[in-house]
Image (cartoon, rainbow, N blue to C red; front, side):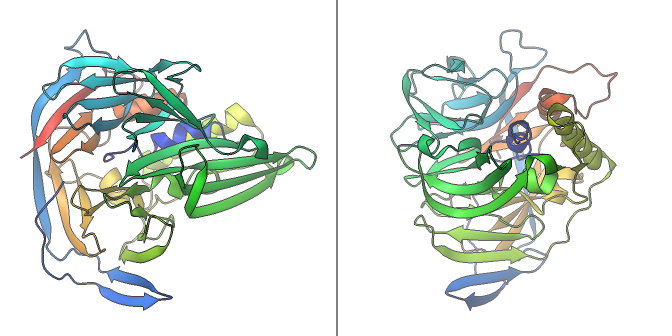
Length: 419
């Protein structure tokens, strides 16, 4: 199981749920049926890529943390960024801090700390380099963006939304590219007199005051307190974790849960194109079903032990999206995330910038996809975070996948270069 250059597809939804209630050369024309409906270009791709499969080999450069490094301790790394000087920023969701490493793997500094004061945050779910040169850390709840200068000094805060409207926000995703800042999360309103909760899961651009501007995707849900139930699809799944922003500011998102369909929006919110791929939804195996059962039952036990609880039989077709520096769109599908890839760590479906299914890229490196996670960052680097899933699920509430008899190993980060 793995991610790309953004926070884990599950970590970004698991922890806030408790608050509920690289580049390859261009190729020629590719197969894919094209039609236009209501001014929107639609591309339907088959199940196989035009250029077949290619292998991406990773070569280890340095590592930090783990049993052999007594000086560096990680809690839960859930995002990796690289600045213009090739320094590496590791966001720690458990320790609520950012570790900054040199390109050679030397720990340079630590930014931020846990708290509620200026430059402080709790339970961060994402981070991004903002257009003004600061780094924005996304706090899940109460949802806000905490800005830090690269020297660690405080640079302001964007509280999410208009406080006069009585809403509160649970935030899960943050991207900034091409001068655009996009956030994904939930806006929630509570009508105390009628006992009604109204929730909107959204994907919107964010202005410099933390206000929502253009909305690219949205879904709503209302329920009464006395009819409370915990349903995975209704309460947890959402477009706010399946999106990225391209270098030119276009927003790329998968909206439906069980349809392999990706929408591309202009920065102003105009839907420009939709492309899809033939794909059969993956039915969760015993391990995956057990993890989601544990997650949903933990939410139930902590909030309303007598409320009904349910979870899905299938995984979302698209688990995660990353737009590479060259504009190609890398997609992690459910099978690549949950099942073994013989001879490789995992694979990605890679589409051209205009939505044609170009190739599948098998990533070859050490690691166990059932335990570790891989983040791509920059043009030619990748970072393996070992023991990620057990650490994430353990922090969530004891739903770790490792055997109880096994001692948990300290988390490490391994920097790889693309060969």
